Image 1 (cartoon, rainbow over the protein chains, first blue to last red):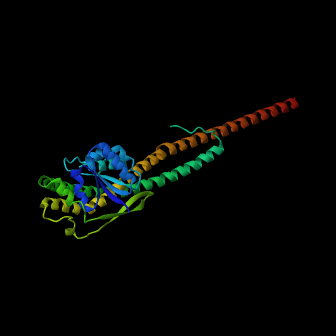
Image 2 (cartoon, each protein chain N blue to C red):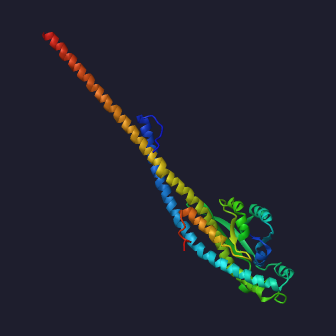
Image 3 (cartoon, each protein chain N blue to C red):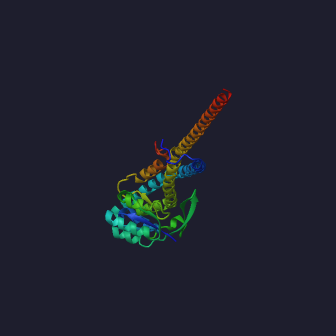
Length: 105
Length: 221
């Protein structure tokens, strides 16, 4: 049994609580880092992180790349869409193929 | 091209020839692995691309409605409305093996399946915007969960593809040419030794014949 977590600022994530996901609201990058580490070492299978924090916590998230769980992925936040998710996918394609052949339009 | 630092003997030659055979076989296998990984990866990426666009659109939509709801309602009202969720998602994680890479497979179960049954509050004290926010969130939830599986798989496959590609290249451009060059050098050295041996024998034979002729001449005289 695994849990699904949502991490980010309160305004962006509060609605996820209605769907029965675990929401963890944080206010600073430091707090987010700590929460993320706690969640990752707990029984979370998927952790959604709002883009802004995802960007800031890139090096922490990188540590969980090779393990099957948790899957950590960015979701848009309440204010300002940054396109972090697309950027990330682009990077995967570049890493695997050598050049971007999917997002090059 | 760098050659291996080994003695030019027949034994070394046999050893390196064997290594070359193994390296060539490994190269072919790794190349096949890389191609298959790439095919799987691209399939996943194509699906994930569309899915992410859809999910992000839905989430932004939900955020918009939520922002309006937040401007109308007090935070406490929203808080208490969302306090006890009706919906619950349980997640089972199993593993799938794609070319020796373990990727997760998420299977999820929702507690309430009816779409109208997701609101955890009475409608009396909250506006329609909150309902909109939650229903658009709940609409993208299955896709959001599928996306997690796809992106995690893509992430892990990308790493494995890079590693496999490095291995293939190391074999193709470094190890196999090195072995070839070394084999060539040893063969040349051995041939050279053979030739100089032949020449030496011929020379000795010539000298012996010359000696014999000289001896016979002296006897006849």
